[in-house]
Length: 248
Image (cartoon, rainbow, N blue to C red; front, top):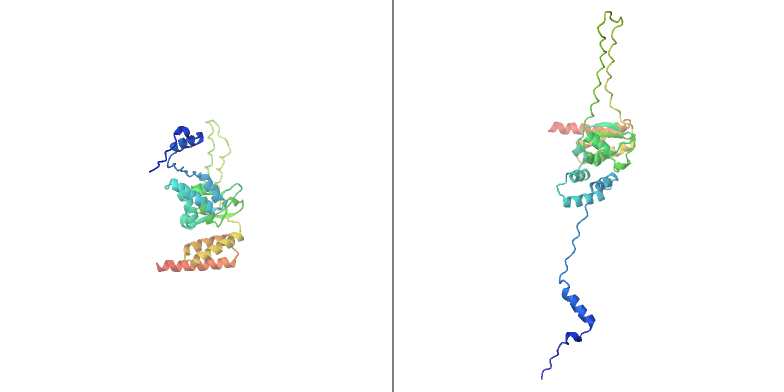
């Protein structure tokens, strides 16, 4: 004889058990996983990190922005500023400039390069690791050619006197002489930066980057013209460059 066990009627169950069964019946079998959207990183945050020389943080922030907008042109400029050679980006030709009170790398990049986002390229071009530390009186090399001085204003013509019977006896005043354009400001001596540029130039020479070596050693010689070692290294790099060009 088989004995069947019958489930107790619902009314016989305790109230707590009934509530538990009701909760289970309405609970979803597969709860939806919450998807966290990565927080957007503002452009100013990337600029601030590079201004302090924090390339690691800036690189992470750039990747986060490029994940959301891969074709962001600002991020392309800032990524190139970290990863590429600044002389290849800005060119070896440059002119001297001595910083003035209130100058910043962002302002100089906007003024001379036409794009403030290239400030980190300009800092690396001059061997400066932390752009925010730029002070007045620092000798820099600015890529490109120096801007032309503003054209002098023509001397005003003296007003013609009204027609009268008697003309004044004194002759017309001679026009004011035209001022000659100001000569470019020579860079102030900076032996510390010159030594850093010399080391970078010798490293480039050993790597076969002759044009970069000539540019770096030339800037070092401008910052410390009395240093015989820099003059010797520059002459050797220029001699190698001439030999390479003659073979092509």
